[in-house]
Image (cartoon, rainbow, N blue to C red):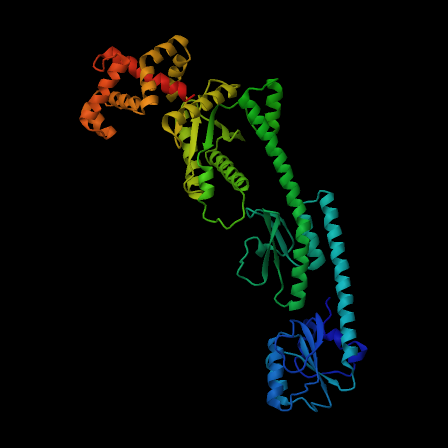
Length: 531
């Protein structure tokens, strides 16, 4: 227990002291320090300080009353007045003022030296603090012992309650209870506006692990409250060890899961029996039908530069790490909400997901899944742009690598065709994949160069974009007026360019065979330079 006013009266030097007001509050008033104060008070008094005075200069009751009022307002623990020289008797109106504020005034004889009182009080306060420090050290040792033995946080909470009598609840950053003591039900869903409930962050560096919530008795004295608050703030570091251990275990498990899913995607399979055994230990069922999806964040750097809270000293790497975790969390939540299995990892700046689908409704399930992910993410991170490539749902199992290759090709090709922020399925890229196959043929490459090579050279030498003109003309099905409007060109300027194209290519733009060859050559050339 702290050193209180009731303890003060039991020390030998204070045996002749006489308590004049608020005697019932003495056991509840703890002394932190002691000082001698005369006029003026100003800001020389600290909270929970025992004030000794001779009241020199308080020659009339009005001055003394103002002096006492200032001491009361400074939140001193009590005022001890030496009577006999400057104050013969404490006026009744001063005693009434102190009683109104439940403030103790202690009368001490003039013969008692302030130095003796000060020495005795400071000795008692020092002894109490040493005792509390030893108790705190023992508490920390016991908590460390629980941690080393692998005890859960519920045991730590129970031990703290047993030692301090303070009900506590320990939760993670999502509000999930990790440990609670007796009499702490009101802290599970606390009213943080209640001044008796105090919340501490449990964190390490920039990582918030959770919170400790404690409840103080309304009858607890200010000093006792402060001591208990200080004790709790000091044991936070010890409680952090539990969260750090859990976080480390989770990171190891996550890394093992990432490596496992990545090995499935790459097709690095030595023994399917071993793979199925590893999958089972991680809670994965490889016998389900899966389709691979690959996602890419397209505008991370732009989002970082335009973020609202630029005052936060967060590096791009830390910010991106948080964003990636948010996306992975939404992937898991979307799968759970649809009651479908997901296996995911983040590799080479891309999200790789194997998602359980029904063989009859692949497109429907994939759309549902991605819609849910993007709906939540666009609310949490406005402006986020994601691109997706969706593989084929190959019949049977053991086709993870094949679906991954399909999804990767779909993402890459879709980005070239449509730009960022689109979803592309492997089946929708058939035409482009056929072009890529043709573009790799040496004979076709020669034909392509003979057909439009002169246009490419002319553009490089003269800066006149005849390739774009030809593309627009073909897209507008040979309609000169529509092409001129699309290119924002005068009709005569367009006709000059079209004539130039015919001259350079030695092909007629009204001959269907020539036009087909030019169109095919443009597509093959675009496919080859976009690889």
